[in-house]
Length: 286
Length: 85
Image 1 (cartoon, rainbow over the protein chains, first blue to last red):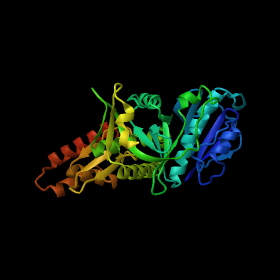
Image 2 (cartoon, rainbow over the protein chains, first blue to last red; image 1 turned 60 degrees about the horizontal axis):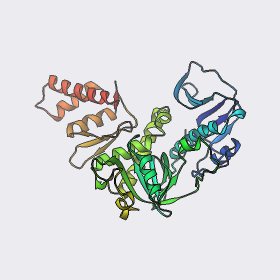
Image 3 (cartoon, each protein chain N blue to C red; image 1 turned 135 degrees about the vertical axis):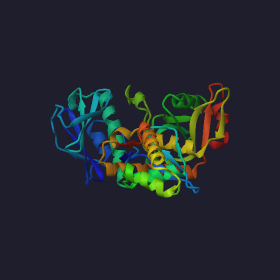
Image 4 (cartoon, chains in turn red, brown; image 1 turned 30 degrees about the vertical axis):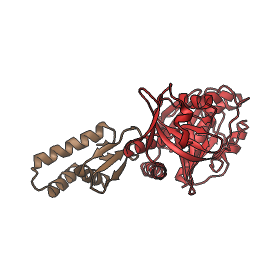
Protein backbone atom coordinates (compact mmCIF):
# COMPACT_ATOMS: atom_id res chain seq x y z
CA UNK A 1 0.00 0.00 0.00
CA UNK A 2 2.44 2.63 -1.18
CA UNK A 3 0.48 5.05 -3.33
CA UNK A 4 -2.75 6.89 -3.57
CA UNK A 5 -4.83 6.62 -6.71
CA UNK A 6 -7.15 9.35 -7.91
CA UNK A 7 -10.29 8.51 -9.85
CA UNK A 8 -12.25 11.33 -11.40
CA UNK A 9 -16.02 11.04 -11.88
CA UNK A 10 -18.71 13.55 -12.80
CA UNK A 11 -19.16 14.77 -9.24
CA UNK A 12 -16.47 12.76 -7.54
CA UNK A 13 -12.81 12.13 -7.27
CA UNK A 14 -12.00 8.82 -5.64
CA UNK A 15 -8.63 8.47 -4.06
CA UNK A 16 -7.53 4.97 -3.31
CA UNK A 17 -4.41 3.51 -1.78
CA UNK A 18 -2.53 1.44 -4.31
CA UNK A 19 0.84 0.07 -5.32
CA UNK A 20 0.88 1.90 -8.65
CA UNK A 21 1.51 5.45 -9.71
CA UNK A 22 1.63 7.22 -13.01
CA UNK A 23 0.17 10.61 -13.87
CA UNK A 24 1.95 13.56 -12.38
CA UNK A 25 0.01 16.08 -10.34
CA UNK A 26 0.93 18.71 -12.91
CA UNK A 27 -0.83 16.64 -15.59
CA UNK A 28 -3.85 16.24 -13.37
CA UNK A 29 -3.86 19.97 -12.72
CA UNK A 30 -3.81 20.52 -16.47
CA UNK A 31 -6.70 18.10 -16.87
CA UNK A 32 -8.68 20.23 -14.44
CA UNK A 33 -7.78 23.36 -16.36
CA UNK A 34 -5.25 24.71 -13.93
CA UNK A 35 -2.32 26.16 -15.82
CA UNK A 36 0.12 25.71 -12.98
CA UNK A 37 2.99 23.42 -12.34
CA UNK A 38 3.19 22.24 -8.76
CA UNK A 39 6.47 22.41 -6.96
CA UNK A 40 6.04 18.79 -6.01
CA UNK A 41 6.62 17.71 -9.59
CA UNK A 42 8.04 14.42 -8.40
CA UNK A 43 4.74 13.59 -6.72
CA UNK A 44 2.67 11.15 -8.70
CA UNK A 45 -0.92 10.04 -8.67
CA UNK A 46 -2.95 7.84 -10.97
CA UNK A 47 -6.17 8.81 -12.68
CA UNK A 48 -8.74 6.04 -12.89
CA UNK A 49 -12.01 5.88 -14.81
CA UNK A 50 -15.16 7.92 -14.20
CA UNK A 51 -17.22 6.72 -11.30
CA UNK A 52 -20.36 8.87 -11.27
CA UNK A 53 -21.39 7.72 -7.82
CA UNK A 54 -22.95 10.53 -5.77
CA UNK A 55 -24.61 8.87 -2.83
CA UNK A 56 -23.02 8.33 0.56
CA UNK A 57 -23.02 4.63 1.45
CA UNK A 58 -23.10 3.10 4.92
CA UNK A 59 -19.40 2.23 4.78
CA UNK A 60 -18.46 5.88 4.39
CA UNK A 61 -17.48 8.34 7.10
CA UNK A 62 -17.11 12.05 6.42
CA UNK A 63 -13.53 13.19 7.00
CA UNK A 64 -13.73 16.89 6.36
CA UNK A 65 -15.41 19.48 4.20
CA UNK A 66 -13.72 22.41 2.56
CA UNK A 67 -15.71 24.92 0.52
CA UNK A 68 -17.75 23.06 -2.11
CA UNK A 69 -15.96 19.81 -1.39
CA UNK A 70 -16.62 16.98 1.06
CA UNK A 71 -14.15 14.15 1.68
CA UNK A 72 -15.44 10.73 2.71
CA UNK A 73 -13.50 7.64 3.71
CA UNK A 74 -14.84 4.23 2.74
CA UNK A 75 -13.77 1.74 5.41
CA UNK A 76 -14.65 -1.30 3.33
CA UNK A 77 -13.01 -0.22 0.09
CA UNK A 78 -10.20 1.66 1.89
CA UNK A 79 -10.56 4.68 -0.35
CA UNK A 80 -11.42 8.32 -0.15
CA UNK A 81 -14.21 10.00 -2.10
CA UNK A 82 -14.36 13.69 -2.78
CA UNK A 83 -17.86 14.91 -3.49
CA UNK A 84 -18.60 18.27 -5.11
CA UNK A 85 -21.65 20.48 -5.10
CA UNK A 86 -21.26 20.87 -8.85
CA UNK A 87 -20.47 18.41 -11.65
CA UNK A 88 -16.78 18.63 -12.53
CA UNK A 89 -17.25 20.24 -15.97
CA UNK A 90 -19.16 23.08 -14.31
CA UNK A 91 -16.59 23.70 -11.63
CA UNK A 92 -15.31 27.24 -11.42
CA UNK A 93 -11.74 28.16 -10.65
CA UNK A 94 -12.58 28.59 -6.99
CA UNK A 95 -13.74 24.96 -6.84
CA UNK A 96 -10.78 23.68 -8.80
CA UNK A 97 -8.47 25.29 -6.29
CA UNK A 98 -10.03 23.17 -3.56
CA UNK A 99 -9.40 20.07 -5.65
CA UNK A 100 -5.87 21.20 -6.26
CA UNK A 101 -5.30 21.73 -2.55
CA UNK A 102 -6.61 18.27 -1.69
CA UNK A 103 -4.62 16.72 -4.55
CA UNK A 104 -1.44 18.29 -3.26
CA UNK A 105 -2.15 16.99 0.23
CA UNK A 106 -2.85 13.45 -1.01
CA UNK A 107 0.08 13.61 -3.40
CA UNK A 108 2.51 14.65 -0.69
CA UNK A 109 1.23 11.89 1.59
CA UNK A 110 1.67 9.39 -1.22
CA UNK A 111 5.20 10.61 -1.93
CA UNK A 112 6.19 10.41 1.73
CA UNK A 113 4.89 6.86 2.03
CA UNK A 114 6.94 5.95 -1.03
CA UNK A 115 10.07 7.20 0.71
CA UNK A 116 10.50 10.59 -0.99
CA UNK A 117 12.07 12.87 1.58
CA UNK A 118 9.51 15.65 1.86
CA UNK A 119 7.93 17.31 4.87
CA UNK A 120 4.73 19.29 4.30
CA UNK A 121 4.99 22.04 6.89
CA UNK A 122 2.20 24.39 7.90
CA UNK A 123 3.99 27.68 8.20
CA UNK A 124 5.16 30.88 6.52
CA UNK A 125 8.23 31.11 4.31
CA UNK A 126 10.06 34.43 4.37
CA UNK A 127 12.26 34.83 1.36
CA UNK A 128 15.03 37.31 0.45
CA UNK A 129 15.27 36.20 -3.16
CA UNK A 130 18.02 33.66 -2.64
CA UNK A 131 17.39 32.03 0.76
CA UNK A 132 14.40 31.38 2.97
CA UNK A 133 13.40 31.33 6.61
CA UNK A 134 10.64 29.01 7.81
CA UNK A 135 8.25 30.09 10.55
CA UNK A 136 6.10 27.44 12.23
CA UNK A 137 3.35 28.08 14.70
CA UNK A 138 -0.21 27.48 15.72
CA UNK A 139 -3.06 28.88 13.64
CA UNK A 140 -3.72 32.44 14.73
CA UNK A 141 -0.27 33.04 16.22
CA UNK A 142 0.61 35.56 13.50
CA UNK A 143 2.19 33.74 10.54
CA UNK A 144 0.22 35.72 7.96
CA UNK A 145 0.76 38.98 9.84
CA UNK A 146 4.50 38.32 10.02
CA UNK A 147 4.48 37.44 6.31
CA UNK A 148 2.73 40.74 5.54
CA UNK A 149 5.21 42.67 7.70
CA UNK A 150 8.08 40.95 5.87
CA UNK A 151 6.61 42.00 2.50
CA UNK A 152 6.12 45.57 3.76
CA UNK A 153 9.77 45.67 4.78
CA UNK A 154 10.81 44.80 1.21
CA UNK A 155 11.06 41.01 1.50
CA UNK A 156 9.13 38.35 -0.38
CA UNK A 157 6.71 35.79 0.97
CA UNK A 158 4.71 33.58 -1.35
CA UNK A 159 3.53 31.01 1.17
CA UNK A 160 1.93 31.36 4.57
CA UNK A 161 0.11 28.06 4.68
CA UNK A 162 1.90 25.05 3.19
CA UNK A 163 5.59 24.69 2.44
CA UNK A 164 7.21 21.53 1.19
CA UNK A 165 10.61 20.92 2.70
CA UNK A 166 12.83 18.70 0.58
CA UNK A 167 15.57 17.01 2.60
CA UNK A 168 16.69 14.46 0.04
CA UNK A 169 20.22 15.88 -0.10
CA UNK A 170 22.65 17.49 2.30
CA UNK A 171 20.84 20.83 2.14
CA UNK A 172 17.24 21.57 3.03
CA UNK A 173 15.22 23.22 0.28
CA UNK A 174 11.84 24.88 0.66
CA UNK A 175 9.11 24.93 -2.00
CA UNK A 176 6.49 27.56 -1.28
CA UNK A 177 2.95 26.47 -2.17
CA UNK A 178 0.20 29.01 -2.67
CA UNK A 179 -1.79 30.57 0.07
CA UNK A 180 -5.09 28.98 -0.87
CA UNK A 181 -7.29 31.75 0.48
CA UNK A 182 -5.72 34.14 -2.04
CA UNK A 183 -5.80 31.58 -4.87
CA UNK A 184 -9.51 31.13 -4.41
CA UNK A 185 -10.06 34.74 -5.49
CA UNK A 186 -8.17 34.28 -8.74
CA UNK A 187 -4.97 32.91 -10.16
CA UNK A 188 -4.91 35.70 -12.73
CA UNK A 189 -2.54 38.50 -11.92
CA UNK A 190 -1.00 36.46 -9.13
CA UNK A 191 2.54 35.26 -9.41
CA UNK A 192 3.03 31.93 -7.73
CA UNK A 193 6.51 30.58 -8.32
CA UNK A 194 5.55 26.91 -8.03
CA UNK A 195 8.94 25.79 -9.22
CA UNK A 196 10.78 28.04 -6.83
CA UNK A 197 13.24 26.10 -4.71
CA UNK A 198 15.05 28.00 -2.01
CA UNK A 199 17.77 26.82 0.35
CA UNK A 200 16.50 26.98 3.91
CA UNK A 201 18.66 29.21 6.09
CA UNK A 202 16.74 29.26 9.38
CA UNK A 203 13.74 27.67 11.07
CA UNK A 204 11.92 29.39 13.93
CA UNK A 205 8.95 28.58 16.08
CA UNK A 206 6.69 31.63 16.04
CA UNK A 207 5.19 33.12 19.21
CA UNK A 208 4.00 36.54 20.21
CA UNK A 209 6.48 38.83 21.99
CA UNK A 210 4.72 40.52 24.90
CA UNK A 211 6.48 43.88 24.83
CA UNK A 212 9.07 43.70 22.06
CA UNK A 213 10.27 41.60 19.15
CA UNK A 214 13.22 39.26 19.58
CA UNK A 215 14.76 35.92 18.74
CA UNK A 216 15.70 33.54 21.55
CA UNK A 217 16.55 29.87 22.02
CA UNK A 218 13.58 27.72 23.03
CA UNK A 219 13.57 24.27 24.70
CA UNK A 220 14.37 21.54 22.18
CA UNK A 221 11.26 19.55 23.12
CA UNK A 222 9.01 22.57 22.47
CA UNK A 223 10.70 23.08 19.10
CA UNK A 224 10.29 19.42 18.12
CA UNK A 225 6.66 19.38 19.27
CA UNK A 226 5.94 22.51 17.21
CA UNK A 227 7.67 21.10 14.12
CA UNK A 228 5.94 17.71 14.43
CA UNK A 229 2.53 19.31 14.78
CA UNK A 230 3.19 21.68 11.84
CA UNK A 231 4.36 18.78 9.68
CA UNK A 232 1.13 16.87 10.36
CA UNK A 233 -1.23 19.85 10.08
CA UNK A 234 -2.30 19.21 6.49
CA UNK A 235 -2.16 15.41 6.53
CA UNK A 236 -3.52 14.46 9.94
CA UNK A 237 -7.17 13.92 8.89
CA UNK A 238 -6.27 11.92 5.80
CA UNK A 239 -3.38 10.07 7.44
CA UNK A 240 -5.72 9.03 10.26
CA UNK A 241 -7.70 6.95 7.75
CA UNK A 242 -4.76 4.84 6.69
CA UNK A 243 -4.51 1.28 8.02
CA UNK A 244 -2.82 1.24 11.44
CA UNK A 245 0.46 -0.16 10.11
CA UNK A 246 0.63 2.62 7.50
CA UNK A 247 -0.25 5.23 10.14
CA UNK A 248 2.70 4.04 12.20
CA UNK A 249 4.93 4.22 9.13
CA UNK A 250 3.67 7.71 8.33
CA UNK A 251 4.33 8.84 11.92
CA UNK A 252 7.88 7.50 11.77
CA UNK A 253 8.45 9.07 8.35
CA UNK A 254 7.28 12.51 9.49
CA UNK A 255 9.24 12.20 12.73
CA UNK A 256 12.39 11.29 10.86
CA UNK A 257 12.01 14.41 8.70
CA UNK A 258 11.40 16.56 11.78
CA UNK A 259 14.44 15.14 13.57
CA UNK A 260 16.55 15.84 10.48
CA UNK A 261 15.27 19.41 10.41
CA UNK A 262 15.89 19.90 14.13
CA UNK A 263 19.40 18.45 13.85
CA UNK A 264 20.27 21.07 11.23
CA UNK A 265 18.60 24.09 12.80
CA UNK A 266 19.03 24.97 16.49
CA UNK A 267 15.78 25.34 18.45
CA UNK A 268 14.95 29.02 18.23
CA UNK A 269 11.82 31.10 18.48
CA UNK A 270 10.82 34.37 16.88
CA UNK A 271 8.80 36.31 19.42
CA UNK A 272 7.07 38.71 17.05
CA UNK A 273 5.73 42.11 18.01
CA UNK A 274 3.92 44.56 15.75
CA UNK A 275 6.11 47.42 16.93
CA UNK A 276 9.30 45.57 16.07
CA UNK A 277 11.51 46.10 13.04
CA UNK A 278 11.29 42.65 11.45
CA UNK A 279 14.06 43.24 8.93
CA UNK A 280 16.51 44.19 11.64
CA UNK A 281 15.28 41.43 14.03
CA UNK A 282 15.96 38.81 11.35
CA UNK A 283 19.16 40.53 10.24
CA UNK A 284 21.70 37.72 10.59
CA UNK A 285 19.21 34.93 10.05
CA UNK A 286 18.06 35.69 6.50
CA UNK B 1 -4.78 -1.36 24.50
CA UNK B 2 -3.73 0.54 21.43
CA UNK B 3 -1.30 3.45 21.30
CA UNK B 4 -1.90 6.46 19.08
CA UNK B 5 0.10 5.39 15.98
CA UNK B 6 1.27 8.97 15.34
CA UNK B 7 2.68 9.39 18.86
CA UNK B 8 6.46 9.24 19.04
CA UNK B 9 8.53 8.61 22.15
CA UNK B 10 12.04 10.02 22.37
CA UNK B 11 14.19 8.36 25.01
CA UNK B 12 16.86 10.30 26.90
CA UNK B 13 20.17 8.75 27.98
CA UNK B 14 18.98 8.82 31.65
CA UNK B 15 16.04 6.53 30.79
CA UNK B 16 13.34 9.20 30.94
CA UNK B 17 11.52 10.18 27.78
CA UNK B 18 9.36 12.66 25.92
CA UNK B 19 6.17 11.96 23.98
CA UNK B 20 5.29 13.92 20.87
CA UNK B 21 1.80 13.87 19.43
CA UNK B 22 0.83 15.80 16.29
CA UNK B 23 -2.48 16.89 17.76
CA UNK B 24 -0.69 18.87 20.49
CA UNK B 25 2.06 21.45 20.31
CA UNK B 26 3.29 20.49 23.78
CA UNK B 27 5.62 17.58 24.49
CA UNK B 28 4.76 15.25 27.36
CA UNK B 29 7.55 14.24 29.75
CA UNK B 30 7.77 10.65 30.99
CA UNK B 31 9.87 9.50 33.93
CA UNK B 32 11.82 6.23 33.78
CA UNK B 33 8.79 4.22 34.93
CA UNK B 34 6.59 5.95 32.38
CA UNK B 35 9.02 4.99 29.61
CA UNK B 36 9.03 1.35 30.79
CA UNK B 37 5.22 1.29 30.80
CA UNK B 38 4.98 3.01 27.40
CA UNK B 39 7.41 0.56 25.84
CA UNK B 40 5.52 -2.38 27.34
CA UNK B 41 2.21 -1.16 25.91
CA UNK B 42 3.91 -0.48 22.57
CA UNK B 43 5.06 -4.11 22.57
CA UNK B 44 1.48 -5.29 23.04
CA UNK B 45 1.32 -5.83 26.81
CA UNK B 46 -2.11 -5.64 28.45
CA UNK B 47 -2.86 -3.97 31.81
CA UNK B 48 -2.18 -7.12 33.87
CA UNK B 49 1.13 -7.74 32.10
CA UNK B 50 2.20 -4.12 32.56
CA UNK B 51 1.34 -4.35 36.28
CA UNK B 52 3.34 -7.55 36.60
CA UNK B 53 6.29 -5.93 34.88
CA UNK B 54 6.15 -3.00 37.28
CA UNK B 55 6.12 -5.34 40.30
CA UNK B 56 9.20 -7.15 38.99
CA UNK B 57 11.00 -3.87 38.37
CA UNK B 58 10.10 -2.42 41.78
CA UNK B 59 9.88 -5.33 44.27
CA UNK B 60 8.92 -3.00 47.16
CA UNK B 61 5.67 -2.09 45.42
CA UNK B 62 2.41 -3.73 46.55
CA UNK B 63 0.01 -5.18 43.99
CA UNK B 64 -2.55 -2.47 44.81
CA UNK B 65 0.02 0.31 44.35
CA UNK B 66 1.19 -1.15 41.06
CA UNK B 67 -2.39 -1.50 39.78
CA UNK B 68 -3.18 2.04 40.85
CA UNK B 69 -0.01 3.42 39.16
CA UNK B 70 -0.75 1.58 35.92
CA UNK B 71 -4.36 2.68 35.98
CA UNK B 72 -3.33 6.31 36.54
CA UNK B 73 -0.71 6.17 33.78
CA UNK B 74 -3.13 4.64 31.29
CA UNK B 75 -5.86 7.10 32.30
CA UNK B 76 -3.53 10.04 31.66
CA UNK B 77 -2.59 8.70 28.22
CA UNK B 78 -6.27 8.12 27.43
CA UNK B 79 -7.14 11.70 28.40
CA UNK B 80 -4.55 12.96 25.94
CA UNK B 81 -5.77 10.58 23.20
CA UNK B 82 -2.42 8.80 23.23
CA UNK B 83 -3.96 5.44 24.05
CA UNK B 84 -7.25 3.60 23.51
CA UNK B 85 -8.43 0.81 25.85
